[in-house]
Image: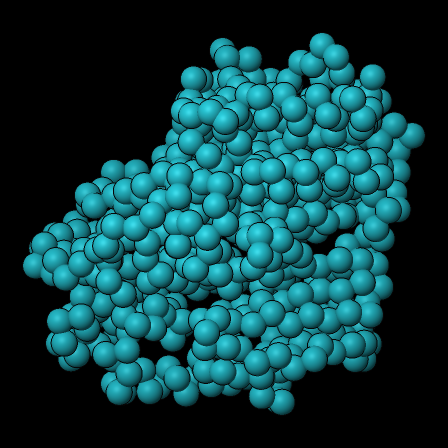
Length: 532
């Protein structure tokens, strides 16, 4: 739990610089993270003064009450800590926060009546989940977190008759994986609505509401479907209703393209756990992800901190392979994770109908953009990307990057593909040389929703759909003057993308949807435009 680490080999990575200032205006997601950093550094009096002041200005703020509970637990004042936790729950904090963790911070409360009551409550139900991840045309993966090392199972039913269709093997949640587990059910039919129930330790869970999900359209076959995508999802309680807005469109998949939780502290396991867990507790999030599968990659604020790079080495600095990668993997149920333990990363590919999605890791192997030679993807991932593009047979091939493709999106910043122009050109020239048709680009990072056209003199023009203000308060300026087809930054928004490959001229439509469900902008691209 130590927060002041001895000097270590960075291996070419940027040095993490966690924000140690208490920031309030337009940065709610930072407030309690910074308080937690001070607690972990045993700078308790300063933390107490700040939190007390913040509570006066924001009465009954549940996250502040929770953090005061953590602070007093650290001091050993268990009665005061328990009182703050009771107040936090009364103010609206989901009580599973005290079960989920970070467990190291909550261990002093283990023998209190409050914790005994909660352990009993969650002994017969998951603390977090179910969260759908790797859903295909014949299978579905479900992620959970439990109070102890419990056996988990999912039973799938016919949605009309409620007859059992399939059940997963029992999988035990592991203490070494922060009490998480992923269970998979297979043998399902494509594009079919199913109901499911969750079992724990051989029995149906208490309060086991009947839930539903839909398998994906048959791989390789023409289809119509809708996905949601975006990034920039810092924790802001009043904006968590965004997950309800997304749910109202019933997407068949959700693509989170980075800055999904905003950790900004790769040197702290506790901070990473805390930041994932406060999102996973939200009822809006849980309702959405129990039905719609989530496919994720990370960006700088989840991998390290702002505008960061990981360097070329697999295991240096140590926190990449030992902390950040395994904790990311513990908290999602993706189809794959780069090359696994030997070549860690968050890249992978999957299909929905006859559309190929290629998800990139733009941080783990990124090198310093100020030095040559430079790479964003690293040689292994770059070759994998070329192989995927060569082998893809989908009507559309969607390449998802956590940072924008168009150089105009962030001016002279080297943090986008603008800092890696040679590799950018290598990839796009490869598409042209191999005559790969139907490529669409998607990205996140900028706190707004844009559409861009990348002119290519030796190939067809490429369209980029960018969206990354799911819940964030902080915004980036709109970019119409810089050449964006459209650019929208107020209020929060996500991208709704509809594919129709059954049409004579297949098409993809990108609509910007704001947090209230309005659609201020849209663009449709036909397959005939994405070829020479």
